[in-house]
Image (cartoon, rainbow over all chains, first blue to last red; front, side):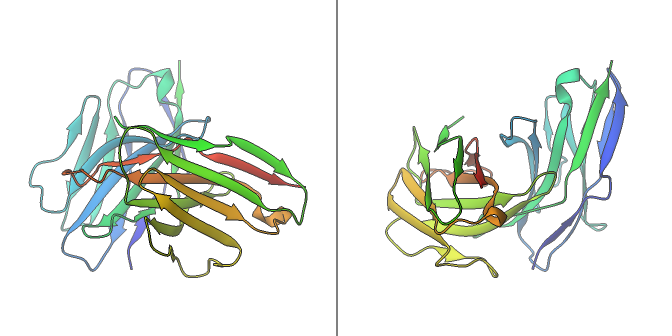
Length: 114
Length: 118
């Protein structure tokens, strides 16, 4: 079984500052993928970034970067230069490499203040 | 990126009626689609995996007879909530994996359907 833990229910960040969202995971699989999704109040799930378990370099996508520490089983998301539009719920998820089913964490609500 | 649509976007029904939710991949073929359920302020929980041309695979605790899934074509999967009750009120989201995907992360989500059962 796979499990994702997000311990921060909510966070406030000042506009233009960076914010780190924590994510730890538990899996017995050797090959897996880690994902971060953004869910604004509209409900749509927006894919942000992906990290494969065998990827040696941390993934980056624009203002999003993933701090992957495999030995510690953590995959924290860093959002740099926060914008008001970043206010949303953020989910960390994990998937086995062969079935693509996603197990989501509880999510972290981010509120960006002007 | 690829587009997945859901219809309806929201539905209100009376207790005891059945509701069908459609999930379509608009510009790609999807042999596999996933159905998730999300209660307010909570996480997404996988309900079932929908496979084109075969029976759906349900997660533990999900009632097969309650949530009927049909994946009749490579672009359409339907979820029917049978004899809906107020506790079935939730946000239902589907996702689809591109048949031709080479990248592991190519899975696309629909916009969701908000079901309210009175």
